[in-house]
Length: 489
Image (cartoon, rainbow, N blue to C red; front, side, top):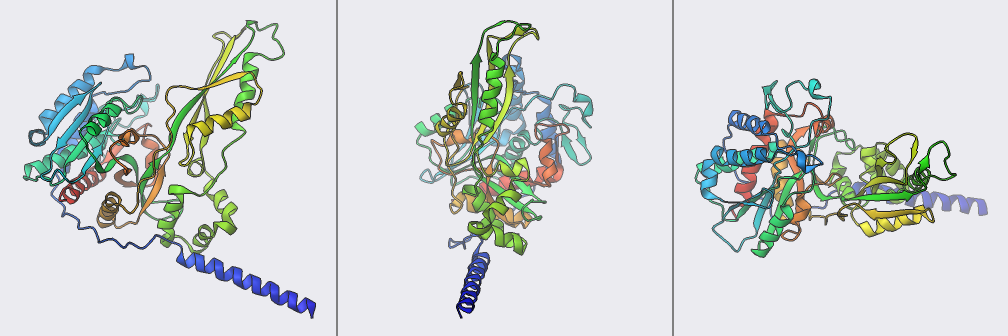
């Protein structure tokens, strides 16, 4: 009798468990929209061939941001800014143009209703250098801007001159057609996003002083991925937050001298122990924040087993995390990452350095701070004789933008209307200069309206960067419809 009661108790518990799991699985998904559907503006004709020719010209301005600013060609930026004025005359006739600081551009296209919050669009002017020795591996010279195989080739075609030219093409087309926004449209284009961020901080301060309050800010970021690793299907990933960025300088000191008579612990040995200690204490993986929001939004596309697992992380959490973290890109969505990147010691192999230095780059997960990261590093090294300090500014993660506010709803609605794919919030693991706009905007989105598989991301900062005419057309039409939809009020 006791055994039978025990068996029935176990079966009842199992049945309850199954019921809970199934209920959570079938109810797991995006929150149902209760707001009024977005009224989208109609498309306008886009001359993609003219846009491609202009993008090619922009690529030929070698606005390369080097780690040492002394290597930069300042004339290239001046020439490119002057070229924008002559290439887009109708837009420049209706918008106020300002050049501030080292060359950041602010365009203000005043709306007819100053009580409405503005929309801010961003795209930077500079590009990263070509990796030494890879020039011959390009299918077209990296600064040729060549039109080949249905694409514009060259450094910056995707990051980020493609967006800059698409914005300008859209503005010129709208100005030519006599469009006047009801809501002010502001375009901010930084000149050194790839290194210091240029004068975007100053641009934000200027706009804040003018009492600008943006409905939202949109900058480069994530895109439409056709082979999303979670679902295997297409999805538009809209960045609603970006990780913080900080570089830790670890310094160990020791007795110098000849390498033939090394002491038991040299500066290099001490430094190595510190690096291993810090990297050996990784931040725990967790499904939280924008990553959790992404899983909910994509739930309808998931295979049943995957949906069941992510809907019941209280039960299957370790399995979901293991699958997510199987790749470095997946793991980076789940925690603060620790990446030792630079080492500095003796200038000669037979000399003991009196000082050895390492630099460790952190990308800080939303909800954590640079102070917490520093505290964890100090705890990891314990009593090792090393000094820890931030190199430059340590940036905390951005705020998480709303997925129910007007800006997100317009971006998502346009994406679904134009490409017929679901939109989902996601975490941007790289850095942009849009976080500097926080003084004027609560909601900052990082999304580039291009489409392709994951392999296309390898071109960014890499060899054979190119933007297809199809994606250039997408970008330009998207910006035009975004401005006419939000600019209507």
